Length: 125
Image (cartoon, rainbow, N blue to C red):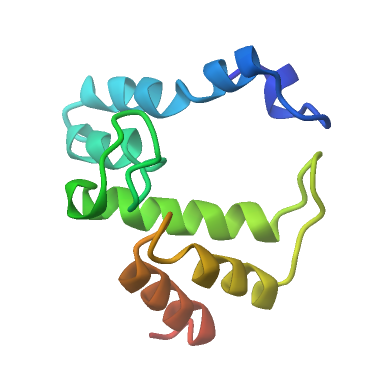
C-alpha cells in the first residue's frame, strides 16, 4: 500500500479506499506462491469479511469465512484500536474490548472475540 494512503491523516477518498481494499487479495496472492505459507492465504484474503456478509473481497458470511480469517480480523481490530494512528489516538485495552464486543455478531465472530478477551485478561491462558 502506498505510504500516502497508509499515513493519510484525513478521510480517504473513494479511489484511495479502492486501493486500500486490495491489500487482502494482494497478500493472499503473495502467500499462495510460497509453499510453506500457502495454507495461510485464505486467512489473509478473507480477514476483512464480516459475519453479516458486508465485508470484502468476496462478501462471505458466517461460517463461510475461514476461522483463521475470523481470528486475524479480531486481532487486527484490537491492534488498530490500541495503536496510535495518524487518524485516531490509541485507546485503552478496556475501550478496545468494548468495541470488539459491540462488533461481535455483525462484523466479528463472537466466539473469537470471547477467546481474545480471555487471552488478554489472562496472558498465561
